[in-house]
Amino acid sequence: MSPQQRKIISISAGIAAFLVAALLIGFWSDYFARRVTPDIFPRLSSVDYSLPATTGEDIRIKDLTGQPVAIFFGFTHCPEVCPVTLYTLTEMTASLGDKGKDLQIVFVTVDPERDSIPQLRSYIGAINESAIGLSGDPAIHKDVEKAFRVYAQKTPLDDGDYTMDHTATVYLYAPDGRLSGTIAWGEPYDFAFAKVKSVLGIKS
Image (tube, rainbow, N blue to C red; front, side):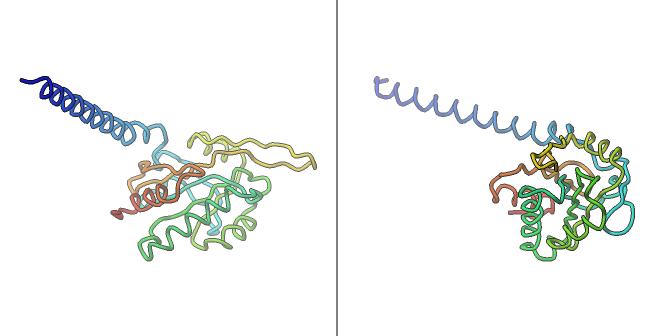
């Protein structure tokens, strides 16, 4: 075997080893994302808290199980993140036609002191009439935030008012109540849209 042939074989073996390693890393990364990450967050069926809703009734979060759900936390005085998140989810589902209507969007306020049900209804309804807003006892809200690993903190402003620092993640739940995926604030639109289609059972 010539030196040139040995060099070619050596390079080919290196490439093959790299591809196998990449395949294994990809497999275990996907396995971790699908099997481990969802278990960090609760199943909807385990979140046994009830809050007044913009629908005019109290909604127990565990009872949302049985349908695809996009749940996120925000507040009506939010200058950018919350309205953009609601608008983006609305735009995505609208573009999917009737199938997009299957996704129930739920907005849980992190500012129940200011966000009354009428306030939430007006705020959400201006963007998405089918989305549901939840606001009630601040103590229950804290329990719900804890269940979803949500950070929410009141931050004073110079004018004596305050704003809310909070987790800006959208939690996507499959009909069986298991977490299907999350959408981070600022995530590329195509990536987020693929996750929304996935929780709706739409193949890209």
